[in-house]
Image (cartoon, rainbow, N blue to C red; front, side):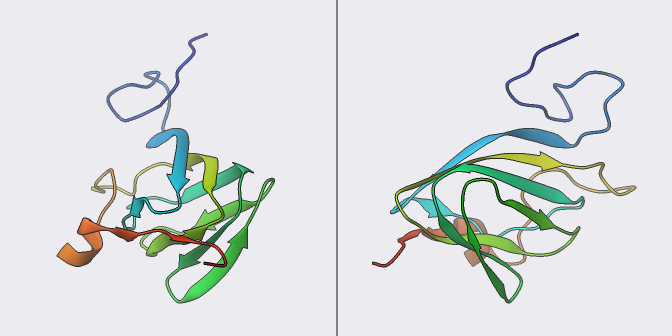
Length: 119
């Protein structure tokens, strides 16, 4: 058995097909980049509240919620109450896929300020 704080293609058990996994924290006033992946991604929220989007759909997130994002779909965090904390999990890459955050435009890659909920 091994214990990891973060999994990536370079740092994971040899038998694992997980692309990446770990914890994240997004603060109001911080920056977030709209992105997509060459795999499915899941966010498990354990603290805070937020408005997220997948393509043109918006979702309210809070503790206990799981946001499921299908391969190739743009996703983003638009606003948080103060701090949003969760765990991300990226499934197996599609054949020939690229890991990490992928961007449709340079503007997406640069990110945007995360607004405060209700503000």
